[in-house]
Image (cartoon, rainbow, N blue to C red; front, side):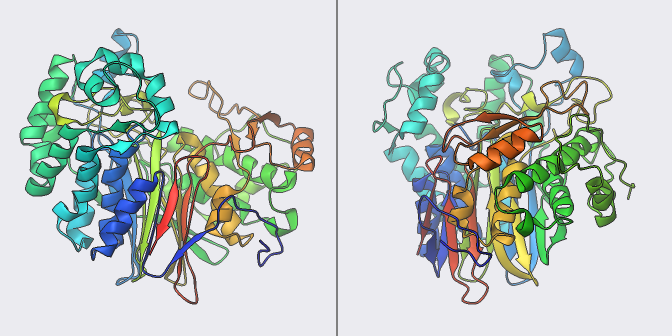
Length: 545
C-alpha cells in the first residue's frame, strides 16, 4: 500500500474496518467476546472488560483474574482521557530480608505472588462508564470457561513447556493437562471453577474477591503453600483512578500511564525523536532505527535511576517529560555511533502480558495492558477458585538504595503501558503490546509508523520489528548498555549493514520472530470509521461490526 508519505508498507493481513465497533486482542475468541458485548448494547468499556475476562480464559499464560494491569480510556462525551491503576502491592509480610534469607525471589510458587489488583480495576471502570450489567459483560468469558475452547498451537506449546509443574499439582493438573499429559492443539480446555468465580464476582462485586468467599479461599491456599499473601492484604487493596501523563508529538497528544508504569519512557523517546526529521531519515532505515535505539537508551537510563512507586519515591516526572530536557538529551546522541556508556540525565525536579484495544461508534477508545507477569505467572491455581495467580514479585530489586527496592505494601515498577493518541481533542489512535521492556520500544515503532509514515494499523503492527536488549547487569551498573540489537530478517540488507557499521551487534530472529503481540485501532479523522490491526506474530485478530 502507498502511504501519504510515499512509504511502501506491506501488511500480512488487511486492516479490519467497522462503523459500530472494533476490538483487537491477542486471541480471536476474546475479540469476539468484546464485539458480542457491543452488539448487545455495550460500549467500548463494556467490550474491554468482556475482552479482558475472556483473555484470562483463552490466553491464560498472559493475564487473568489473578493478575494486575492498567486501563486507559478516552471518553468521547467529555473529550478527556482517564486512567485506572489496577496494580497490586507486595504483601505486608514480603520483606527484603525474608527473600534474601531464602536465596532471593523465586520465579514460581506462592512466594512469587503479589496482591492481584486487576479485577478491581475492571469494576472501577465499569462503575463509571459501563452500560451493561456485569453479568452480561462476563457472560462470554463464563461460557468459554464452562463450555471449553479449542487450544491453539501457540497455547499448546506453552502448556507443553509448563506440563511438569502443572501435572504435579492437583488444581492445575485438572485444568491445564489432559490427565497429566500436555493438551494437544485442537483439544478442548475448560475451567469450570473460574467460571463460578466470575459468576460470583458479577453477582456480588469486588467484596467476594477481596473480602469474601474467594478472598478467604486464596488466603487459605496461600497459607497452605507457604505463601506471604494474606486475607488482610486482599482486604486492604483498592485500584484507583490516576492522572494520565502526555506529551505533544508533531501536533498529536500522546497519553500514557504515570508511574508506577514505565509509560514515561515512550513519551521521552518521542520528545527526543521529534527533534529529528524522521521522514528524511526514512522508514526502517539504519538512520531512523539507530536514532530510536539511542533515544531508548537515554530514556531507560532515567527509568533505572528514578522510577518506582510514586507514593514511596519522588520522581522528577515534569522535568523528564519537558521539551527542554529532550533537547539536552538529543545532544548526547551520535547519529553515526551506538553508545555504550549511557548514564541517566539530570531532569529538573518538578511480562508475558496481553494488550487489547476497543472502540465504539460514539468515539470512545480503550487500551488495556494486563498481566500475570511471566508465562502462566506463579503456575499455581488458587484451590477451587480456578484463578491462576501471578508471579509479579519477580520484578522487584533487592539491592538497598534502588528506587524499585522491595518494601511491604509498595507497588513494583511496571513495564505495562497502554497508549491513546488524540488530535485536537478528538480520538485518533489506541495501541499497545505485551513484551516487558520491549513494550515502549514497540510502541515507539507503532506510533511513528502511523504518525510519521502514514501506515494503517495493520501495516504498523505487521512492519519489521526491532528490539534493543537491556544490559543483564543493569541493576549494578545501570549506565552501561548492551548494543545487542535484535532485528527481524525482513529489514533490508542496507539497514542491517548500516546498523552494524554504527556499532550495533545484530541478532536476526527470523521474518516474524520479533517480540510482542501489538494491537492498534485508528479512528478515521473524517468519516469516524474504526480501523483495527492485530499482530500476526501471535493468535491475535481484529474483529469489527
